[in-house]
Image 1 (cartoon, protein in one colour):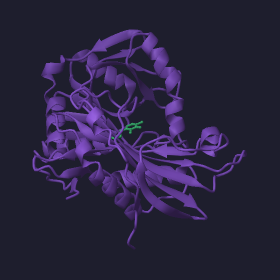
Image 2 (cartoon, rainbow, N blue to C red):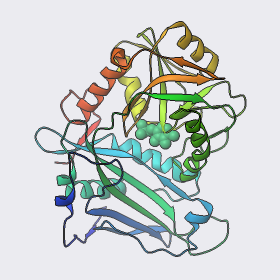
Image 3 (cartoon, protein in one colour):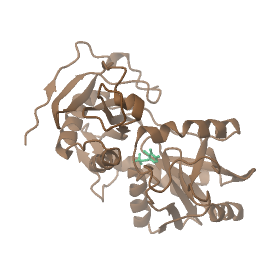
Image 4 (cartoon, helix red, strand yellow):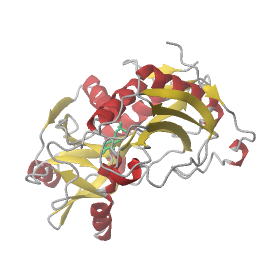
Length: 354
Ligand SMILES: *Cc1c(COP(=O)(O)O)cnc(C)c1O
């Protein structure tokens, strides 16, 4: 089925106002966005239009009952100047898993891919090329019924907009093992990138910040004895630089594309991967004894967020200095190299939009 996207270009590009050397993450938006609407049981009217405010009724159900899901992905430029996407199919599949869980309609893969590639091709000049930068892409879907009542909406909008972003080398962060609040528990929607999962994380994170931490390590909702993930990143613990612990996908954690890419690269490098339930006590024990040589979170925004230390029951367990993190430094370089076409793509992750 050929998809025809109506294109309404902006009269006046804003690209000259963008200082590509200094971009604040998530604050600069490119000229255009892609939008398609779900009405009368089908997706219709796919279009590209200037990025800007959208008109909505105060009663739209997404704002009241939370049928709202999103994705996060990036586009890059290779040395030849082609626009590249990284594993976009994984984001489409995950968006549809989130949609299903939230009682929302799935979006056909070819419609998502056609909208995405048309938009990114049109916004190619917005893809920054400075080391570490990328065009961050935010696909999202939300319920638009003009109706007050708790039931699945009949109407939805799906939009993709773009933010040029510079490298996001956060300083290594201190994380706190959370023992009171819960992000997700069995039967809930932890695996979905559903807006409400992030809303409920704000207060616990604010409280951790007041205590001097940058982020939380979420633990399981029943016992708080097993680690799940940290903020919006999946967790990796490196033991003696040869063994990797990462929590298995138990339905409560997000199936990160970066997580999966990391596992595959670390396996290829010859490390032993242990994807399983990981207890807080073994993490603390390994940090205390010095066996934990590296520890980081993975996600699209930063690729790797190094963890400097872990707080648990009033004690901070500090980890090796940032420069000595052999594995996390290697992962970052390799992954960004693949994404930008500078490193061999053994797993066929990159889609060239040429
Ligand atoms: C998005 C997200 C991640 C990381 O997923 P990527 O696909 O690697 O960007 C991890 N945890 C949570 C809770 C997330 O929302």
